Image 1 (cartoon, one colour):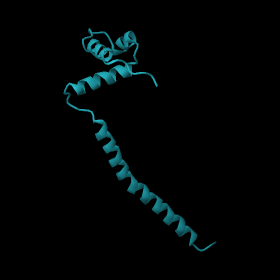
Image 2 (cartoon, one colour):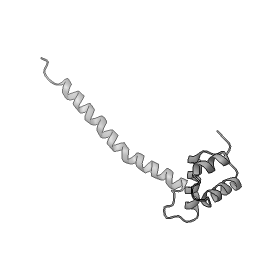
Image 3 (cartoon, helix red, strand yellow):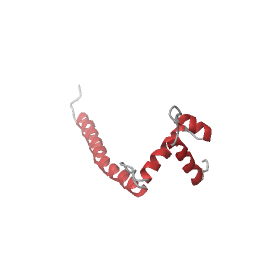
Image 4 (cartoon, one colour):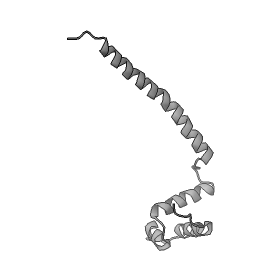
Length: 98
């Protein structure tokens, strides 16, 4: 796994990306700094969130809690599917043979 960039470097990249001139793309800035364009866009979104943006990203604890809740919601649906298939299989076994 690659080592994360230092905090100062990330802040500089975000600052340059925000203060870019018209016509300069994020891809060009990312190439100049040697980072992937997707990484740069993620850093910009994260910086917006950290500075009080309109849509805050979930905190890691909230994210884990949300994952667990979705898992609990999905589980009964899976159980119902298994029971439905078992009932269909067993009903086929009780049919008179041809």
